Length: 68
Image (cartoon, rainbow, N blue to C red; front, side):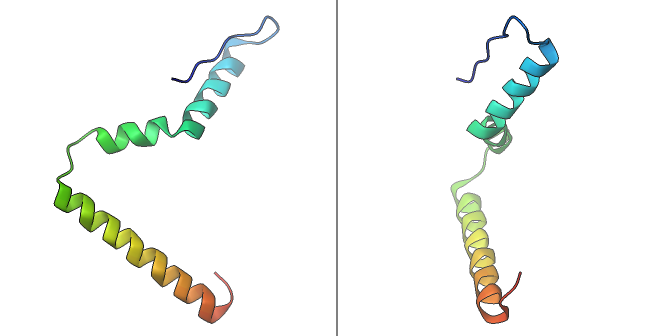
């Protein structure tokens, strides 16, 4: 669990900014968005396969063109 203690010389806004950065770094918000709706195992498998295809295509393009 991510937690932030407000320092004596620190404003609430700065502490909130540190908290949001630590949540982003921990991947909490992306995890919540993924779990917001149930995803069937077949949909999850299709999503992972599509991501793998995109990654392979991108790698192929970079290898053959030399730039992104």
